[in-house]
Image 1 (cartoon, rainbow, N blue to C red):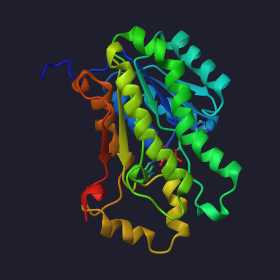
Image 2 (cartoon, helix red, strand yellow; image 1 turned 135 degrees about the vertical axis):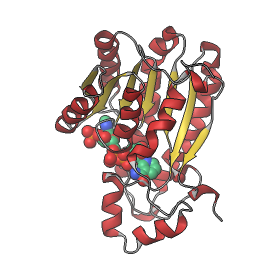
Image 3 (cartoon, protein in one colour; image 1 turned 90 degrees about the vertical axis):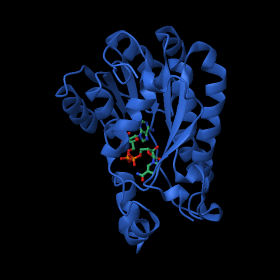
Image 4 (spheres, protein in one colour; image 1 turned 180 degrees about the vertical axis):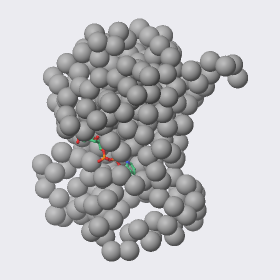
Length: 256
Ligand code: NDP
């Protein structure tokens, strides 16, 4: 291991959904390792607060308002990041959401919203960023899956389809882009305390206790738990790691 193994100085990372939750946890890690960051989200107030937080870590940070399901907005976002920050070395496809319904009550537009937000967005952003990632000479793509990439749930047909799909999409891009020295990997979070899960915790009786009992680490994950894995997958430390789907779950996925 060389001293530059985890060094991200001079590199630029796009983090979709980087204005809160797991995305902000990863953005903070990347910034602490020296990367300049573009935070992508729809809520401009949240994005402005995230950018302020990241700038305090001594790096350049910009907020780009974009809906990641909208191809024109994604293309404009990528062009703006390249113009304002000069290059793109790392793309983190993290934006996501869920609609908790079983298949027989899920509407087609709800199915499409979940698939578009969690899966098609990764395709749009990856395709748009590919020329810049290739030009960097050492591109990295990090996609965010879920325990629902492995398991399933009665109330998550669209969510689990999107998160299963993100793993196969990751593997396909890893195969295609290895020749360009772009590594493409996925992170599979366990149960993490964010806005996404706060609602479920309120609505689903006993969820909090079940997660504690089902997770060998005996706790919910914190967004800070994603800083290290983001730096690893964005840095030269992972140059021979591609197509992997790495659980960050306190052992959830290995406990029978
Ligand atoms: P949050 O709800 O805290 O964050 C979701 C982020 O996605 C927000 O920053 C939001 O920004 C952004 N986003 C959503 N839709 C869009 C869109 N159409 N265009 C642009 N940005 C969008 O959730 P988490 O941090 O928990 O989730 C982050 C990722 O981690 C998701 O992919 C989720 O599925 C995954 N995950 C989370 C788990 C958990 O336990 N929390 C477990 C497993 C996976 P804005 O509101 O500004 O648009």
